Image (cartoon, rainbow, N blue to C red):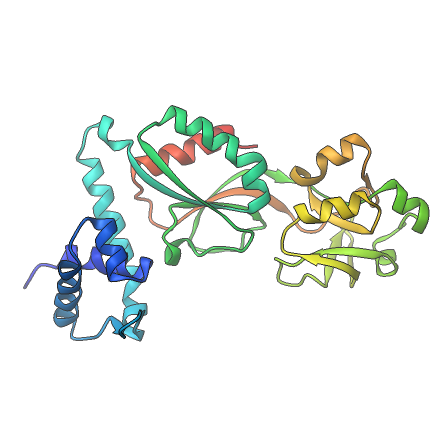
Length: 296
């Protein structure tokens, strides 16, 4: 029985992630012919085509899509095993890919990353900020910050803290339009909707005694980013629902007020999530542990 071609599997995972033989050759410091031969060798051993090739681009075949998770796992496990064989000094080096929501990444994560870079000068951080939810495995991320109620999945998660959400408006808006006394009143107010949710136009709101209110708010403004709502909210243009890390300074300053005290939408938390495998390079563990100790 022939041994698996681990190099070819790792090259396959890299080409799939980067979408280019040339880019994979650059990242792996190999020649493009070496990359091409490795993929052809793997395809021959498997008896199937992994990529559809044209003169301008490549795309994964059906078989390639099915086999990619196995290639990614082989590449991760191989890298972890190599690092485990080195001494501690050499473990803490290399690149860590991290994803995070845009607003939280700028306001809270960026200062922590700066401190991490000082503490670990040989670790490179590739931070991608986007409010859209990323697929850690398919997109090649080592870990991600996720602010949400996490569904059951195979991903590993570390819960850092609860995140409180508030229904907020400017005192000017309340003076002009009146204070909502109950969630149902929101249907008569201009509301700001956050679109990166499964049902942005439908609000399920939980009260202080656990009662549930279902509301279809009147949409005045909708965005996939919470930060862009703040200026219009402070200017008195409507009512929004934002997490504490975005609106707390404006609440403390009196620019916004909590218009439905005790009411909230969902149980939101600040989480670090990671791919399912318990095997991680030491540099990834270093970043995760640093974030656990410093993020709030």
